[in-house]
Image 1 (spheres, rainbow, N blue to C red):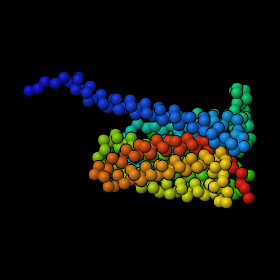
Image 2 (tube, rainbow, N blue to C red; image 1 turned 90 degrees about the vertical axis):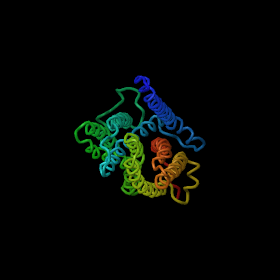
Image 3 (spheres, rainbow, N blue to C red; image 1 turned 135 degrees about the horizontal axis):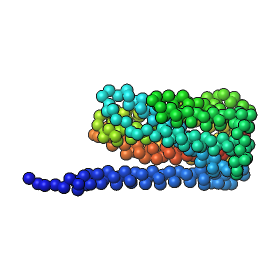
Image 4 (cartoon, rainbow, N blue to C red; image 1 turned 60 degrees about the vertical axis):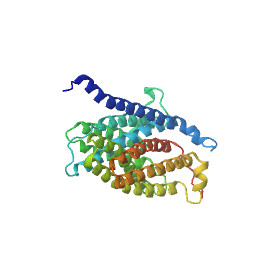
Length: 336
């Protein structure tokens, strides 16, 4: 009989897992740091040579909007995957630790900071005395900013309650507020633009936020048929979301930049350059998603689809940050 040392065996067994977990944490921190550079350095690169002027503090505003969008993605995507997992027959009962509370908390902080900017007439406040909370009730943008602050706070409370699925309603209010904010009443047919943004933002949040939670769930379940089935269901939903994203994105771009001028404005305006970068990134995501879908349906081990799916998550994170930058840049001129 061979004697073994339990402590050593346990350390050997847990060592690789611990090291891989540390490696993942370091990779996430590096990706977050790199993503933060997009809104901080992106405005100057996008505006260079265009002759356009950005609003004060555009980098900080872009970063806050990126955090707000990321929080929305994480919370809504988690709800989507939980719903898909519940509908799987014979699925394991284990679920990964929820990120909804942290996401909603980050969204609340970002929305609060953005509301403080709105309260000073879209100028970055340099002291608490400059913030006019009461003035937020006097403007449409101010009321929408307050709605987002309260909605994220309510969503965080719902995430801590016995019915975390109820957070879908305050999160939906955030999406509606963002859709209305992006299209002021002075714009031509603002309700059409708001409707397009509503669908676009909802689909983007479900797609970008659902995939990381699906991968976390598959990892917790240690693969198996249930994990492959969950990825398959998410892939089918993601295909429909991508189609809706593409359609609404094209329509929104044509409303901002008419077809006759869009090729010129994509390279000569800050908005167009950032939109072009976003389109390229989304194309990369689509290729990675297709690669994962092929592996899922044809590979001997369907869970090898997790490799391109993880890369897809990283690029999706950059897309979210670039979207935040896009909302902070000056809109292009509608040439006739």
